[in-house]
Each structure stands twice: as structure tokens, then as C-alpha cells.
Image (cartoon, rainbow, N blue to C red; front, top):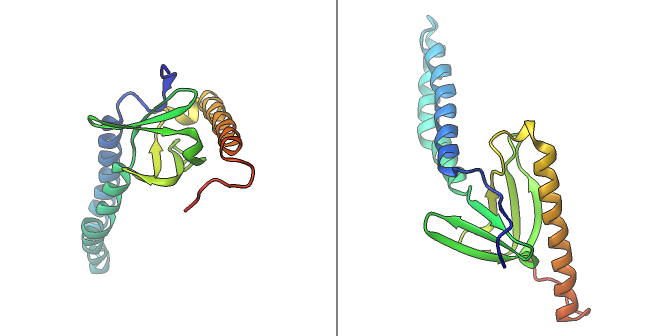
Length: 166
């Protein structure tokens, strides 16, 4: 079946770089302002933020940004791509679709773990708050296909069984 559309922004890599740069600028600006204070406690706080950022904050940001994938779909499957590697996920394997953040990151929770884990995160639009109606309508259409696929899967395996869950 031909893929209907990409559900990810055109360049996931550029989004990851942009997000990293913006978060870095915010953190560096805050540390810079705190470091110029005449108060020694403010300077100590600035140094502690540098250490906290280097050893706690940035590894978590890096790990989260690695979870954002390129996602496309047709009427039966999601296609998740990272670099040259792509997997196909049938809609009956999708447990839930929900928005994660105000900037429009969406999370597809799966019943089973795949090569990317049990969730796939995508960014449908760089301008999400401004075009939320179009993106939400598209995701509602996918939610409908997921529900339909669940019903068809239930009919296929029999009414006495339920979908597997973790």
C-alpha cells in the first residue's frame, strides 16, 4: 500500500539541532547572568548549574531527542525511520496516541517493544501551535484507523481474546 503522508517535520535532524541550541542558549544566558553577580552564593549557584547541566540535564535531553523519529503512514501501518533503518508497525500494535508537549510532540505508545522501544515520538509540524487544527485532524484520522484495526484484529483472533499488553 502506498504511504499516505509523512507525519514528521521535513528535517527531524534540524529540529533536534535547533532545540539543542535554544536550550543551550537559555542555560548559558542564565549562568552568565548569575556569574556576574557580586554575591558569592550566586556564583556558587552558577557553578552548580554548570555541573548539574553537564552531568544530569544534558544526558537526559540527548536521550529524549534521540527518541524523536521520522514517521509516515498509510491506512494500515506506521513507518518509523531513523537514518537508513526503517520499521513497519501495524496499527493494531498501537496502544495510544497522545500529545506530549505544547510544541506539538506526539507519542505513539505500542503494545510490544520494537527496535525503538515501546514508544515512538514524532514532531508533525514545526509550527504546531499555529496549525493545530490540521495536525489534530490528521492524528484523529490515524486514531480512527487504529480503532478500526483493533476491531478487525479482535474479530480475527476471536472475541474471547484481548490485545496483548505489557
